[in-house]
Length: 328
Image 1 (cartoon, rainbow, N blue to C red):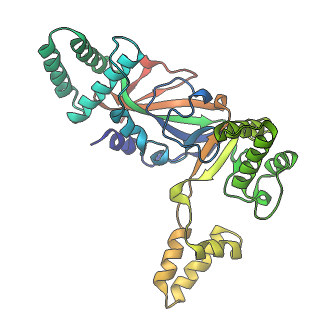
Image 2: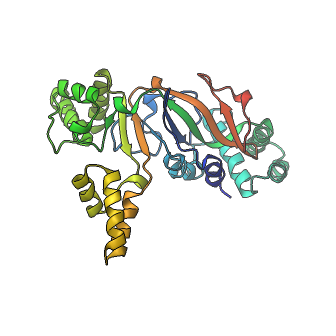
Image 3: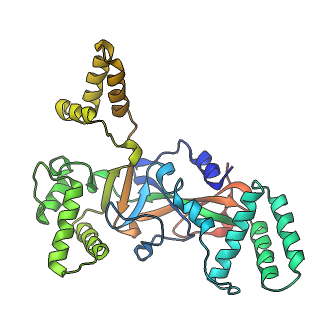
């Protein structure tokens, strides 16, 4: 079993979404941190294709937990060996993570392997590194990539909905977009609104750097009272043209589904209708882009703890490493 499988098993069924205090989401990273920081954008795997900000997901399976973060943790090498600096510590953690996975997350087998390697070197830089990996596993600290459970202190209706036309956005969002000069036309969705504003940033500041213009765009939206973006994740998007047409015809996904189910029962083309019904029945979960990291409260952090199947730490405002315990 891989790291991803272990954490996926624990988080299975724990899909987030709106709550009385915000929006329950997940964020995965190969990095260990206490709080979110916009300055760190670009150090993960995301390409910022849905705007500039910090990305999170209602569904933990698409939060990065099931993506390249986990592969990158093992594939990347973090520079030359320099004892006891940050790079050295990261290499030690990488070694401990590699050995744990190789030995099926059995801490005793992992420790035995590392001890044998340390004994083979007896002294020197590699001896120090194997010894530090042994200490890390015995310490009970989390090792390897983390999945963060987060409360995004915002309401869905406060956000720019990437997939909806301007007319279907919440009233407060529509008013804010109108003040910013976004046209309220039938073809303009949240996505077009964002890129329209990004074009304004280019004209206003003259920057040819797309990332910088996107950062300005997110800042302007945040200052206008729109703290982020909401968009359907890949698994929730519909691709059947007829399903999309029926939603437009019947006014809602629910009404379109009811009509498609009736057609499926009486039509000689039941298989065709079955495909449409399947698209309309997909569970819908969303991803989010937060413009202001201060609105993201880390509630728990998941990762393997020294060979124990899974560790999670409860959060206040900062991470207390000593509070971690194993949680199945």
